[in-house]
Length: 621
Image 1 (cartoon, rainbow, N blue to C red):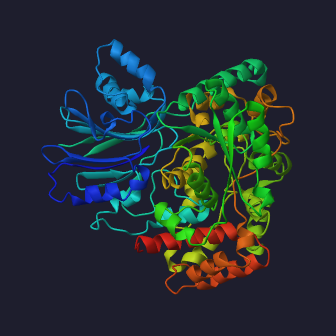
Image 2 (tube, one colour):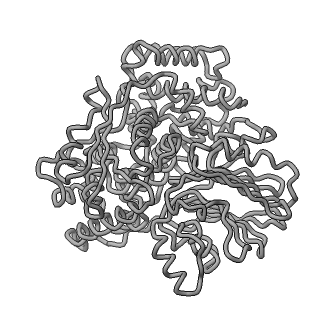
Image 3 (cartoon, rainbow, N blue to C red):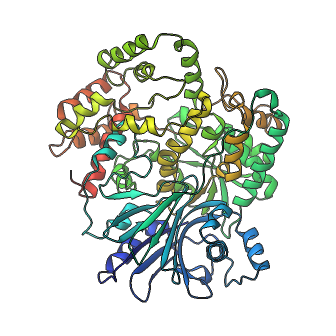
């Protein structure tokens, strides 16, 4: 796990100081080593910060060059099948100077060119300079576990693991992209290739770029897609065979992801996903370390009893950590770290957990991806209910109910988003049920700047998968949007802020293709059950007293904190400041309604974090 930053240009570079400054702005991602390299003609510059995980020797230093000296790479991530690729490449004549996965990527590119991506199993973002071809090949992993920002203009492409690496150059503009802001206020994150800063972009998951240095032009393409379901009906599904295949794939994924030259642990919440990962970890090692974090004074957030059951059953070396109450002073630090603001207050406990676990190990396995792959979120069952109960109601009537809900019910009123969602045809679309602010509220918040409202709704419609089955459609939608833009961003930034690498065995490409290609919707979510196939695996592997129905999100008591104390003070200071870009009357209404018991805590958090971020980076409209 590392930080990468670089520049590729059709013209030689005279101003080069920003590269090392941008690299060192991301020291938290790689405190163990630093490197910088420029091509002889100064058209290509790569810089790197290293968190040493595989091959701790100086041979793993980056930027790295192949034996011929004609290929150079900067790489962030882990390739979990690098040992097999290493042996395969050795057998066909390649030679290596290290035992690192970085050098394996170089050799794979030398052998297979850009098609090497199909052979990589892991999380990654990298850039490879090919001196002979005068090209740079850039790629991001299939799910988006590793970040990749870039800026392309006038024959020059700059890239970085985090926006702050690019913003080290003061000559780059810092202006809000209004369409991205509209998405942020609606969804709580900025989706796809969009970036909150105008002129910047994100390389989407499963995409690659080939930059031609001679012309300054680049070609971008998608190199991997989610598979289509390969069964025609439930009658053709062998459920026992599916369960056996799931067990084998998960066991192998965990075994691969426990490979490291530093201590590896498991984040054990005692829920379905982390408990199954623990079960597989003890098959791979007789020295498994598990960690649970408790939040004193908040019993609803305390999972230690459930985690203790699993740790005791499997005989792990279990550590129960205690997180001290979060300080409001943490929010400006998080706003600095999350280059794009993100409206998910669980970044706070994620940071606190990462901070504590880092004192014991450098790598941990987590359970991210289980809900999206196997139908774990509550809204999957609620959507099925909505389809069954409301589907028969004539569309004009449903649309009228939706319109009335938006007009009559205040923002934060329980059930308002679901009523507004009735205007969507569930046979082909998906309602934006997790919307923070609807179109009218976004117009009010932004005033005359709100000329891009409804852009988020168009993006949501355009990104909606075409599957006819509602559960397949909604799980794919979450996998391609909420997972990479919220969950994985939160985990990456909060963990790397503490120089901790978090791995996700459930996001092994083979498990992803299994879940979306072979598992029918009735083994994911129904009206009454969720995550059905995974829970059947718990019946096979976990103790009988394990609570399979418990579903507890990773959260903080934000509503309670906003009643009184430092968080309330901070929120009022930020949102009532004359420099705040959001409409004063609208913000005051949200604050008043929060005090009345409406559910506006996350919405207010979204506005506060955005304002703190905007101030931190001196961003303008």
